[in-house]
Each structure stands twice: as structure tokens, then as C-alpha cells.
Image 1 (cartoon, rainbow over the protein chains, first blue to last red):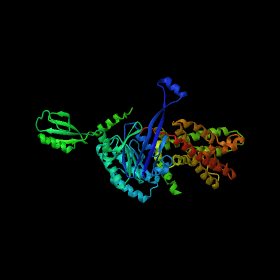
Image 2: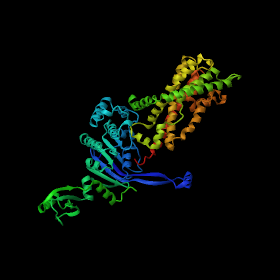
Image 3: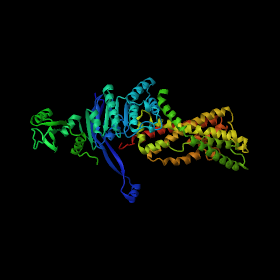
Image 4: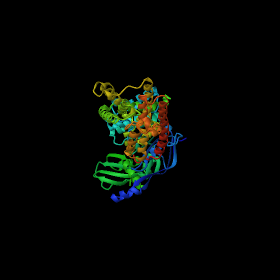
Length: 330
Length: 273
């Protein structure tokens, strides 16, 4: 049975609006105008225990709204969902005790408290026994390298240190599901890598189900086997990362540095996409021609200095996908 | 029981420790409260000159004023500033990621705030008005000790209920702020609190026909009831009545507050990230 099921979830926000200028403000005193913004529209998916799902989409697509509903702090306007048999917004307290949530843009720790005191407060709030707490804390401190910052108040930490503490804080009570909303936002390259490794390990070794949203395609590539693309509040695609990439950009690139000037070179099964002196970039359809066949053909016909096969850039893949579905932040 | 209360006690403890760090504000408060206490004592003493029998005699009124100054921080004058800020920033919604009842979480914070602030101010005001003042020319205007040991014990019980009652009212102010999404709407509460708690004029000095109603209205339990118990103006059955009034309002306001907060929380939307 699926651990998380989401059926036809919908969310409409009512946003107060007013006409521009002083006259508009004055009219607003008597008659409030509301615009309805559809944040989610018939979103459905399900997640098995131990899966790691990436949620991507442009700003305003509905990623955060989905996470907020799943974590029990927002009520949907339509549809239902269950996490481990509980409807999040109906059984909020029981539900949130079993999940871990990190919002990259928000802190859930106490600004003025040293990290270890925040952890101890969370231990009591989640009613974790002292022995369990110490075991879990020591492991997290070890894995996330937190020992140098434990006695420092949150406000004095760097963003990378803070995010590691936030993740640890979300795991102290051993949740079976972890929701990460843009956990790598603003982090430097090293911190991002460390965070990805940790999440991967947590998912693989502990079987924690992870649902993460991100703008960083490298997060998705490094972590998620399965991807849901969301745009304008709708699920546009729910598939493996590879399948999505193949569908959008089935073309791969073969870049060849020829040893001599080759003039008008032609290779069966490939077309020239660009050339720069002796360097020629060929495009080929991976479904029709295997890379090694193509390499053999080129090498047989010409003197070659260097050769490499590349996939198109992930950002390029996603940008094309959004454009195909008109899902660009309006 | 202790397992149920554990999260709230932890928040209360952490909050209390934090509030105790605001010592500069507390010393400024002590100075202000002693100064205003002295002025109010002199004003009321001037009114007492030449009047006939009053429901409270002058030493009682003077003590009443000093108690009011010492326990001023106990009054629910404003909503929790952090919660008010959280309503504007949306953090209030995120607090609901914790497996705790929002009402009791806010209650624990309010209680820590009231008790910490009061404990920083009450002692110094007592030292100034009850210990040092007798050695000056104004000895007649000193803070006097409780009527007897029974009055002292009942006062401790009643002032503890005051802290609880005031916290319940503070949470109500928080809810008003959360419901209206505007942090300053609650300031009108101050006028009611000041008048009907007896802080401006002791409730006993109001007309006789109003006395019973005044004792049973919710604000009397914030100041007037424990103070009158302190110097014995409420004793025996009357003291029991005052304490019962406090307890009743605690129960009613808590039930109402929980019901209202659940309604408000159900329709809070948090947009964007």
C-alpha cells in the first residue's frame, strides 16, 4: 500500500485586490474585491514507502502549497490526501509527530537559543525519550558535522551551517517521511553536495521516504529517480528522470576534435549542430544510433584528436519542458 | 500527566529563561512603578483627608496601590509581540508543524512572560516600598504586610490564579490579532483591564450596588481580588467567592479561547513560500 496518496487535490487562494490610486484605496474601504488564484488543480499522485521523489516547477507552480497541505498546516479547497493513513489537516497533531519538514526559506529553530538547546526543546516537544534522543542526536551531529556549532546560537551561523542544523532538527524524532522544500536554496557548492549525500544516505539506509522540491536541477539529477513536474497548479509529468529527459531532448551530442581540417564532414546517423575550427558538435538520436556505433564510424573515417559524448544541459531540458506546456511563471 | 504537559513545560521553561535576560527593562520598570506608585499614594491620600468612613482604610488603599505597582506586569495589556509578528510574517502557520496544541503552546508562552516579568519587578518594588520606605518621612505610606498567615496563604493562591487568568486573556488577545491579522487592534483591551481590575480605583470604592457584579466580572481576578485578600478585606466566605470567580473565568476563557483559536487556525492561509 502506498504511504502517501494524493487525489484530485485543489487549492484556491483568495487574494484581496484593490484598484490603483487613492480612489481605489477609498473604494476598498467599503467593498473588498477578491481575486481567486488557483494554486493547485486536480493534483494526484502516490508515493511508496522508501521512495525519493523530486518535485520541480517554476516559481508559483504549486510546489510549496502541495508540501504545506501534505504537512498538515494548510487545508486544501478540494480533494483529499493521506499520509500513513492519516488526513494531515484533520489529524494534525498525530500527523506532524510522524513527519519531518524543512522549509529552506524559513527557520524552525529558535533564533536566540544555542543549537543544542533548540534540540533539547524539540526532544521535549516531540516527547522523545532521553536515550533515544542522545543516540539520534549523536548520529546526526556526526553525519552532518555539527559538533563545532552545537553551542552557538542560530543567529550566528552561516546559511550552510543553519541548513544542516535544520535538517538535523527535523530528524530528531525519527520521522518516516521527510518533506524538504527547497533545502539547497542559497547554499554554496560544497554544502549542496554534502546535503545531497546526506539525504541520499538517509533514504537508502534508513528507508525514509523523501519528497523534495527544488529549483536546482542538479539536486534532482543527484537524488531523485522519480520526478513530478508541476506547472500552473497541475501535474505535467510524473515519470523517471531519465524518461523525462529522453522525451524532451532525446538528442545527445557527440563533440569531436579532429586532428586535421576535415572540411565538409558527414557521418551517417548524425547531424552537425555547430563547428568551431576543428571542433565539430554532432547531434544524434540515442534511440536510433548508439553512441559507440557513431564513435566507431567517425574514428574509422577520420584522424581524431579527442572525442566526447554529452547529454544536453538539464536546465535546457527543463526550460524546454516548461515552454512546451506554457508553464512559465506569469 | 507529566508526559502530556512535557512540551508545554519545556516551552514555558525556555521562554522564562529568555525573559529573565531583559534586566535593563525590568530595572527601568521598577523605577517607573515606584515613582508612579508614590504619586498615586499621595493622590489617594489627599482624597482621603476629611472624608468619612470608607470601605477601605488609608493603610489598606496604600498597600493596594503598592501591590498594583509590584504586580503590574501581570496584567494582560498586550498580545504576545512575537506571535503578533508571526501573524504578519506567516510564521504562526509554520508553528503548527509541531505536534502541540496551539492554544496551550501560546498559553505556556504567555504564562512564562507574565511570571518572568513580574518576578523581576515585584521584589525590588517590595524592597523599596515595604522595607526602605518605613525609614523615611513617608513611613505612613508604606506597603504593609498581610493581615495574617491565612490571608498570606490565600493571597499566594489567588495571585497564582491571577497569573493563569491573565495568561488566558493574553491568549485571547493573541487570537484577536490572529483573526484580524493586525497586530495593534488589541490595544483597546488596556482601558478595560485598567478600569475593571481595580488598578485605577480599587473596586471597593465603587458604589455599593455594583459590588457583587464587580467581584464576578472577569477583570477583578487580575488585581482586586488577590489584593483585597492580602489585607483581609476579603476573608472567609468572601475570599472563597473571589477565588471561585477567578477559577470560573479561567475555565470559561480557556474553553472559549480554544474553540475560537481552532476556528481561526482552520482558515489561515499561507501563500507562497
